[in-house]
Amino acid sequence: MAVEPLHAPDAGPPPTQSIYGGFAYFQGAIVPFDDAKVSIGTHALNYGTACFEGIRGYWNPDHKEIYLLKLAEHYQRFLKSTALLKMKLDVSVEQLCELTREVIQRDGYRTDVYVRPIAYKASPIIKVDLHSPKDAVAIFAMPMGGYSRIDGLRVTISSWRRISDNSIPARAKITGAYINTALATEDANAAGYDDCLMLTEDGHIAEGSAANFFMVQGRTLVTPPVTDDILVGITRAAVMRLALDFELDILERSVDRTEVYQADEAFLCGTGVQVAPIVEVDGRPIGSGRPGSITLGLQDAYFRAVRGNDPRYRQWCTPVYGGMPRIT
Ligand SMILES: Cc1ncc(COP(=O)(O)O)c(C=O)c1O
Image 1 (tube, helix red, strand yellow):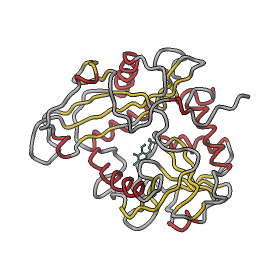
Image 2 (cartoon, rainbow, N blue to C red):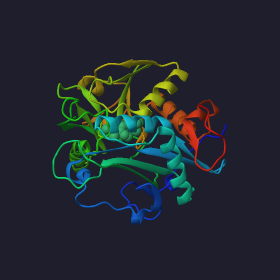
Image 3 (cartoon, rainbow, N blue to C red):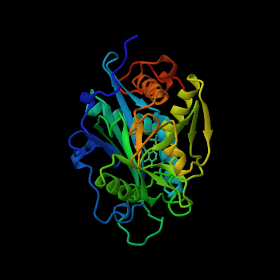
Image 4 (cartoon, protein in one colour):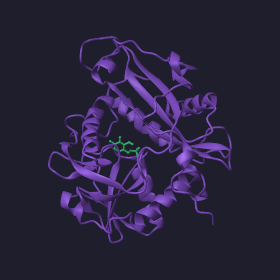
């Protein structure tokens, strides 16, 4: 069986590249991306009252197809986030899935892509509450390759705490909450680390800056529970499913900081980072100091599944251009 390269450097540009060209779903129509503009008075721009998703699409050159990963699951979470912000949007998961396919079809991309749906408080109002008369949805996509390195991350424990559920709930992808991520990532990068782990207010590991955390102890995967101020990741669920194929045990429980230092292996997972081994935390090597075999096995299985190369997981993949219909 051909082994797929773990990292395709030609798969697309990095996330730091400015978005340009292409199309967007905006104000009920698909328009050129450059024409999709909002007023500077927009409530969401002023107060962070928007929520979003990040969805990857993987180009499969043999199938000549882009597979959108767990598309319906992302839009189910999206609508839950909008409900938390009391948004009134008359759109269903099915409609959002179809609009996403249409936007990328118009883009005509034949590469790995990243899709950004965003729902926002659109009224130009100064009052800080959730009663915007107008809520809106937009969707755009861009070519995107790796978000961060997948051959071994050096991370630090951030001095910034993860926002708690009773401050700004992490379980909803609220734009304003990502200041928390930006502060932590900025400091970690400035100190020379690839990324960071964030602690809950009571000092347990919550997650990475924009990814969920797993550590490996023997043949057990340990990950913080959904009640430890994490975004309940869709990749997290995918990894847990793949772990069953490797006959790994899975434990969702609070994780102490020093347990991470002593773990056999550790990794981050998320739409952006995909499955990214952690090889060092605060200068301490994790396990052998190289990506562990369980992590690499999961990473390989993940990449095969998301690119539509594992028939057992084809139901995770929604084709953009046609091809095999999604089995639900
Ligand atoms: C804060 C945070 N945690 C975790 C994740 C991972 O979630 P998912 O796997 O659904 O992309 C993300 C997004 O990628 C995130 O922004």
